[in-house]
Each structure stands twice: as structure tokens, then as C-alpha cells.
Amino acid sequence: MVATSSGRSNETFLSDYALSEQVPATLGDALDQTYSALQKAEVFFGHGSDSAWDEAVFLLLSAVGQPLDSGDEVLALSVAGDSWEKVLGWLHARIILRRPLPYLTGQAWFAGMEFKCDERALVPRSPIAEVIRNGYAPWWTGDGPKSLLDLCCGGGCIGIAAAAYQEDLQVVIADIDTDALSLARENIGIHELTGRVTAVQSDLMDELAGQRFDIILTNPPYVDAADLASMPAEFQAEPPQGLGSGEDGLDMARRILREAGEHLTKRGLLFLEVGNSWEALDAELSGLSLTWIEFSEGGHGVLLVRAEELPEIVQALAR
Ligand SMILES: C[S@@+](CC[C@H](N)C(=O)[O-])C[C@H]1O[C@@H](n2cnc3c(N)ncnc32)[C@H](O)[C@@H]1O
Image (spheres, rainbow, N blue to C red):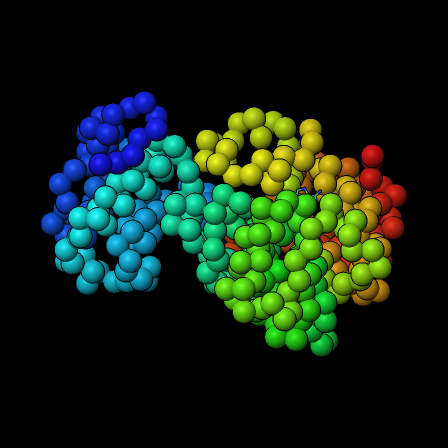
């Protein structure tokens, strides 16, 4: 039986979403039911998949232990009773409790790599993955960078991916939250990068005095108060300190811009993600020539700042 904590009975949940308690004959039948239930529930997609179909496929293949790149041949397979029980449990958590799917499966993907994912940190989804894949080009030229800081690292996906993509890169990842850091350390171990990726608990760069980096990648909290108040329920499952950042979403970004000059090498680069708050930052820094990165794989709101540009940006910050 599906565990319920919503006060609604299991039978009501199953009938509301046309799910059978009886195990479907094939994976294809199970997929039809899963897809219809997710469509009907109008859950929000934004944590790794962008449609009810993609999410139904991920959920089902994860629950039955088939590879996520399986082809149609698996649709004829039979479904074990305990696998269907798992599917119903995950659907209940997804539909009634609105938990994002990666928190149920325990896996997320970033820059083509698999990461352990749970409620200790945000679900990875930063467009900075594309910057890493491109080796920081066209802004970084010549030999690869030697050192990189992933500031506000959450579960560590950005810094770990950067290290995995460049084998001579030394990486520091930092976050204020000990829970997020414990997940990040597990991910460092899973990717066998303990020799090159160091996790540090720090309020922004407070614990990194004297350290300079060729590249700083940061996806800090940047959601403004209005967006925060209207976010779909799925976001409430994520750690709140990972999302909000003051009235206009820029409290953390301003601090980072003020402090980054002390931590970049002479030709260092800061990649600062501010998402939808980019318009507010762009307006605040109007008059300066800013580089907002254009992504080919989707995403927006990442500012590229060269070390030499920081002084005039800091001067232009309103507060
Ligand atoms: C938007 S999440 C990004 C997580 C991860 N980088 C990613 O892309 O999935 C922001 C992270 O910033 C951390 N954070 C919030 N305030 C911070 C601070 N003052 N210093 C360092 N980290 C902070 C949160 O704990 C959270 O893990």
C-alpha cells in the first residue's frame, strides 16, 4: 500500500489518478498509467525534466532498475510487485507532497555526470554546466586555468564537474551549510576526486583569506522576494537558504562582487549566476559594458566579470 501523509486515503489517491493497485502486466502499461497520472496532477517540471513524459520515463525506469537510456524493447518486460509498489510510493510523493523527482530517485545529472541528490542541497540545474563543458572559452585563453572556486557549492556538482573535465585543475568548493557540504563530500568521494577537490565551510569567501583562483564559478541564492512568494510547491522541498536573497534577489550577488577582487588572480574570471534577477543587476550597473552569457543549451542570467572589471562594478553598486 502507498504510504500517505496527506490525510487522503490510499484508495482515493489511486482512483483520483487512475492508478491500479494491481501490478500492470508490462512496463508499457505501467508507463501509460504513470504518464497519465503526472499529466493529470499538473506537477511542476523544472528539476531535471521538462515534461510529464520525460518525468514518467525517468521515474519508471529508475524504480524498476532499468538504464535511463533504455529503448522501446523494455516496454514488453513484466513488472515486479515491489517495483510497482515503489512507483506508486514515488507518484504519491511527487503528486501529493510535490517533492521533486531527483529527491525520490536520489540521482541528478549535471554536465553529463551523475550526482547523488537529496534534500540536503538544491537539485542541480545551473546553466554553468555549459561554461564548464566549453572550458571557459572564449573568455579564458591559452593553457587551462590552474585553480577554481565553486562558491555556494550545494551538493558540489559545479566544482566536481569542473575537476572532472580538466584533470590538472585544483578545486575548492565552499558553502555555508554543513548539510549541503556533507552531500558534496559524498559526491567528491563517488567521483574519486578527493585529491583535487577540497570542501570548505565558509560564509562566502570568509574562510578563504589569502587564496586566489583563476576561475570563480558561483550559483548563489538569487531569487527575489516576489518570485519566492509565488514559486511552485516543488521548491519548498529545497533548502530555503539556497533560494532567497533579499528583496531584489541581489544581496548575495553584491557581496560576491565586492569580495571577488581579493580572490581572483590577475587574469581571473568570475562567472556569477543571478537567474531572473539579471534585469535588476543590469539596471543597477547600467552604463557599464557587461557580459551576459548567451547559452546554446538553455538558461540565462549568468554574468561574466574579468578581474580588472571588478573595481568599476563595485563602485557602481548601489548598496
Ligand atoms: C542556488 S544553491 C546552488 C547549489 C549548487 N551550486 C548548484 O548549482 O546546484 C545556493 C547555495 O548557496 C549556499 N549559501 C547560501 N548562503 C551562503 C553564504 N552566505 N555563504 C556560502 N554559501 C551560501 C546555500 O547553502 C546553497 O547551497
